[in-house]
Image (cartoon, rainbow, N blue to C red; front, side, top):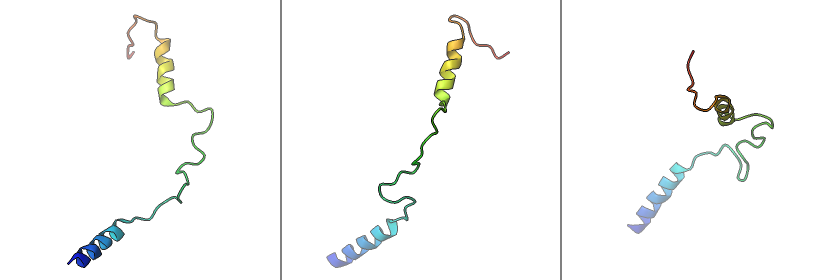
Length: 60
């Protein structure tokens, strides 16, 4: 009975294994973001700093 449970457990583990896209220790994006590119967050902060204090932003 214990052997049957072990066999079923092994079968389940084998079914769960999925093929991997990358080799072990290899990054998904080895080159990363190019140098000099600015993130969206940085762009938004720059725009907000351009608005004088006390003035509300308008859509027009």
